[in-house]
Image 1 (tube, helix red, strand yellow):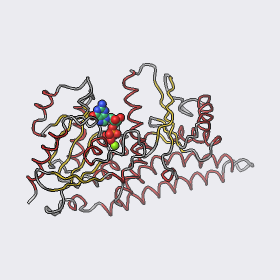
Image 2: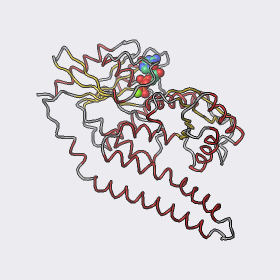
Image 3: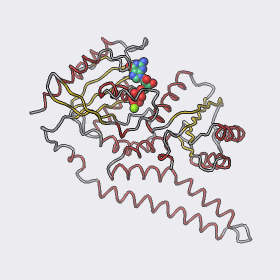
Image 4: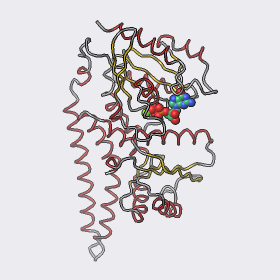
Length: 375
Ligand SMILES: Nc1nc2c(ncn2[C@@H]2O[C@H](COP(=O)(O)OP(=O)(O)O)[C@@H](O)[C@H]2O)c(=O)[nH]1
Ligand SMILES: [Mg+2]
């Protein structure tokens, strides 16, 4: 299994439609890189393919796929991420083609990558089941395709598909049964989970969770705060096992725990939203949320709205929050005065997690919030 390999090396494949603007493509690729790093992998190679539309059978076209299969071998790639949501037949065909060259190659689309990240972070039975449910649904048509293949092979000797149809039916039935089974287990778990979080002992060490979109700088801020500066941006094996730190706050004379979280993801595939919520939920048993926002991101208002919506859905929108506008060292940021005015009730802070600007003000802000809800 891939998660056992240290620093698995990834190839990212991205299809660039002719009419797509360059910045959008770049953002999407940056996000893929960030996601792969969150998984614990290294991006070894990025391949972009200009095409008007995706190939219906292999997504990138058979010729290109053969060429890339050789590239995979030459560069010792462990896993391929196609940075899009593919039809499961496209993914299946591409995987088969690559596996002819390298049998143990992993081939994921964007949904698979996201599920793999959730899978690494999920602790509770509920989150694990939610992930399994999406994964099973996502793979279903592929299993079904295998059934069809077997039916073609099995039905070859004058049986006109008799035995084969049975195979297909067995596969489908198994798939449906599996989904029903997971749904039943989830139903059993669904009771009172939201209330478990509320009974926190106020005398415990307070916890701060860093939330926000992928690539906003959560991990960079986490490293700055917890002084785990050995995890620089070049250290690519940043696992979330190391995602809990402790800092001492001198003005209030106490320590707090700080946790990094899986980030929000742009265009999260809709079928993964429950799995995401359930995985995120586990990390949000905190006294204070720091919402990190990339100030150079022109879509930042939309992204804040998505985060707030998810917090409201999870019924944790009553938590104390500080909005941390990050990357103020970048020249093209959104206007600070405007943001201060818009979000005055969220104690907005402006920092550069990379060079430390604004960090002491952020610490001051944290220390004015923390005592407000301890005994
Ligand atoms: N210019 C600039 N880049 C930053 C800053 N903070 C983070 N980054 C970069 O943004 C990218 C994503 O950072 P990361 O901490 O991994 O984001 P995460 O996905 O939210 O954990 C990395 O390339 C960082 O080096 C900052 O304050 N200024
Ligand atoms: Mg991160």
